[in-house]
Length: 514
Image 1 (cartoon, rainbow, N blue to C red):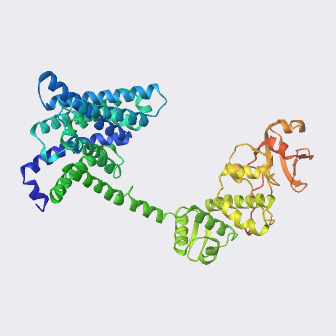
Image 2: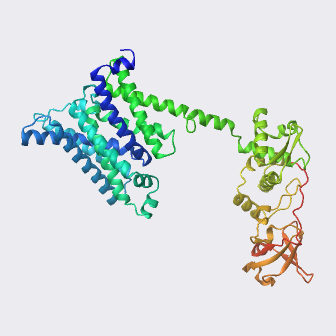
């Protein structure tokens, strides 16, 4: 049989495909909730723990009723084992400090081991092929298996359809679900019971390995293609069916085990989607990274144009200041123009108001870092290079800390003016006198202990005068014409609100190196 159509003409293949599709659809739908809730390990635990249930069910039916390999009895035993496993996991998680994934690993291994011991000890009464239980035989499905899987699938899908909103809200935001009155604990147990039923009904047909694979892999594949749970479930069901069809055909072509071939096909399907998914795939991520311009390149472009002093600057003049190839530089200029930071074109670029603001932030960080490095003893020849690296660390809080640590210097080691803390000056919030430059007028808001003795009162108007003692002493003028010198601590303690009227505008910054 060289084609899927030829394979579908065979009765045994039709039955295997039907059984596998039923399992795949319900596993795909339930698996979406499992993936979203990060419960994948639980499905694996239940499937392994059922060895004890199947063995126990087989033993009870054999010794009590004299029935051998009674399918309903083994299914009830497996379901009982799954419920006991979940209850033990829940109990140990609540009463111990262990994380749930650790508890799942401990409990399911213990129950699985108990099942193996049970089958070994009562091997004269229990005739179960553990290899068949683990690997399954989807090509040897019986009518009873089909009926059981169909009934379980119908029941589980009905529960999910009827209570879809509750499952959805509880999966993504349990706190919100509890707030709106959804019984989160009941929903969790309902989902666990659905997973248990799916695993129990399918494991006799497709085995432990395949049922876990169908529970997780199609759902994970759908997760790469959709951000909506309902669409994700439809896609997961579709990927599950295609995995069964492709895997069965592959099993016939290669003369291999059906369960392994189905899971192999599902994995290949996942890898293909992982590479080609339009939004969350590897190729899409690579394309986004190619389109992105590194923040350091953006900041270098803004800084180089700011140093032009308002004159249009051409590409050739920008390139020496930016560590990027020409294509990336051109891409950065286009992005910055589209984002409203630059204006112009091939003849030259200038900064917009927002671009100037961002460039001044970078320039302030650069010159403060140069000042800091100079005081730390870094040779003057190294200042610009090292500060050029550190300027990209321009988090406002970090730069403000450096500024205060240095005593709010007005110039850098090269004599270039350091832009003042204009970010805080733009708002109406109060700022310390220490951050103001010469010419600002402000109204006192509050006075701390370090400046209490100077007699400033709330509402008093002050004018900032030139500093003294190489910038170590602040000077403010009062309304009566007197001048008051302030230490750094006192200048930090006087909180003021800059006046919108009568205050000087920020001083322009001439083009300078750095």
